[in-house]
Length: 203
Length: 203
Image 1: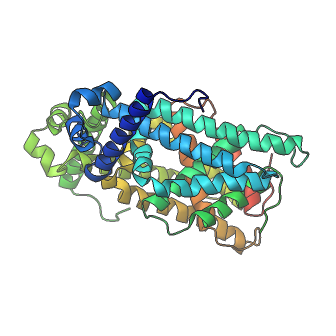
Image 2: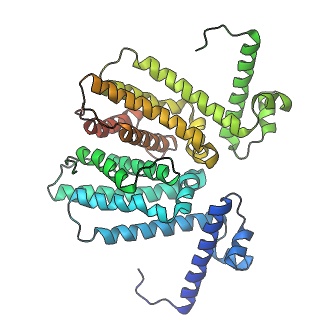
Image 3: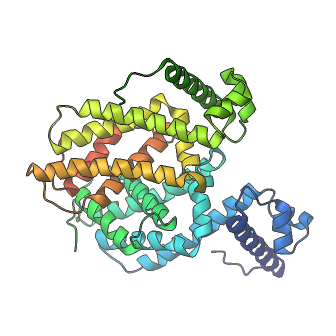
């Protein structure tokens, strides 16, 4: 998002940071978060341990950075996909479709978000990220009100309900506990939410 | 549920088992599950370590037994509360109200269910318990169909959606991330589900 071109130094720093993140995520996925040591991360990323600590002071910090990076990428995709899309149902569908399929590309990060993200030490970050998505959803509903499509109401509880359904569906799909597709889950979620906000379900 | 009266020995065994469970739950709540050792549990429950292992071979087993016991108690309350209640909306409301308020009496067990219950080693138990509740919900919907109240359809996805919303609401309330009451959350959930199954929301 920065306008100034990055310095050579900044480019190198970013590159090394993302190399470390990649290495750590591979290890977390393979050995498990609890079993991975910072030494393993340094070795896998081919950096000295001292160098690793210049970037991240703990595994917890690596986890939080990985989640932030994934969520930022997801938001960027949603922003792009929403360009030019109009109508509450259509905009909601686009947002849900991306949030339903996105984690298939990063299942390891998602599995950590499902478990670690609920631990006391990370709940605050998780809650803040969820709140941001709820605000995006509420924004879509309010645009619908402003366009005269749906009646005004307090949309926040509906925003949270959508988040809860989305998270449950993603969790079951990514752990192989449901055999639905992201498209089927999107359709079910829409069939619950659209009538609740005063729109008819579209087939 | 057993018809035969319990032997004196069985009564003693049950008593000691529940004493151990109580002691363990207190420790898990205070020190955290990861930090509690089986030695601590034996000490707190005032039993020899050898005796403890006659009842539970690991902390993981204690956790699973505690969850099962809580869920069984919850089911029993729901069964009793549903006696004589008719109508899909009313029956659904009763079930939700109990599932929304129950964990306030056992927040430690619930917090473990939220975190540990999602770890690989416990997902199967968690999923099986969730499936049973989804079946109860589907049963309520199908009774509504048989009574000519609502149209037939595949209710399983709606049952899961209800579970997801319920879990999200309970989780936020029990971690102090939402200031809604169980009654308010029940009303919101009903306002989403009733129209989806073809019933009007009741004020």
